[in-house]
Length: 60
Ligand SMILES: [Zn+2]
Image: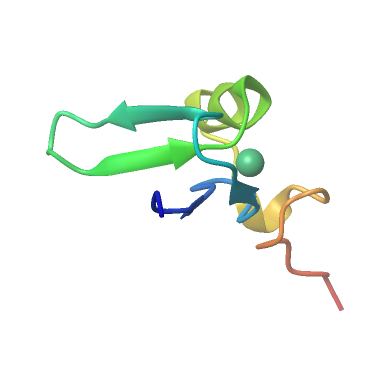
């Protein structure tokens, strides 16, 4: 069984063979379910402030 990763940005499940992997210069490996999440990560968006992310925290 291939390992199933969760998206480093939206927290969604990444099906084996899909999504993309990004390695930081520090050696940290990040997995993204789609180029959309990767793009948002590159834009330095905060997942906690992104409504479609599983990490989104609703402001009270
Ligand atoms: Zn994602």
